[in-house]
Length: 210
Image 1: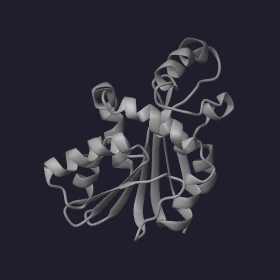
Image 2: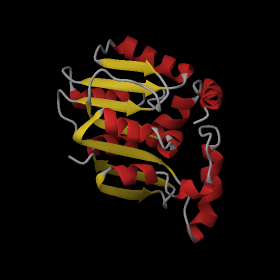
Image 3: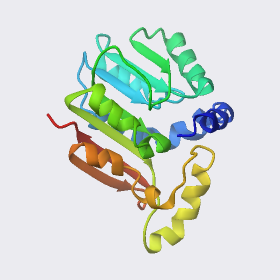
Image 4: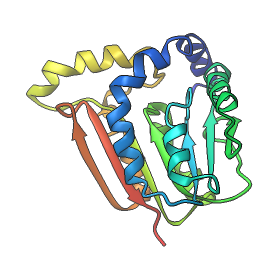
């Protein structure tokens, strides 16, 4: 991943990200978190947590006795997430500014969420690092994002998908963007993927082999 380019982009994006993304992604965000099948007391990792839009839902799922970790590369985006957690007084949310390819945690987690983290999904290092070092065997991974579409539907919607993605991503490899969950698929058991919005969005999930 181009770390400095990501930081530059999200220094600008942090100002308007919630306004643009919160409502359009709310239903899909809730569906993704339901598929994590979290229990009270679990530990969950929000990999690429951004401004923290998923944090309240994750915290509700794990309760006061669970822990929510948020990893975010952008200082500007993470600052917004910190303000939210400080205002709410959430003490079991632990936010870490770090590259998704290099971060460390003190303990394993039961589940991982990647919500609109295109660059992380395409990384050959980020998800394998999580699976090998921090996700418990049998733990679940759920990812959501945008993708390109083959065939006639692609002629109708791919240009729009690329346009709204440009402010947020640094990697737009066309071949990878048709299946941005390919790295995830190769790591997980029971992998499944479902299309949304005529195939321009995906919801993918699976478990770490035991």
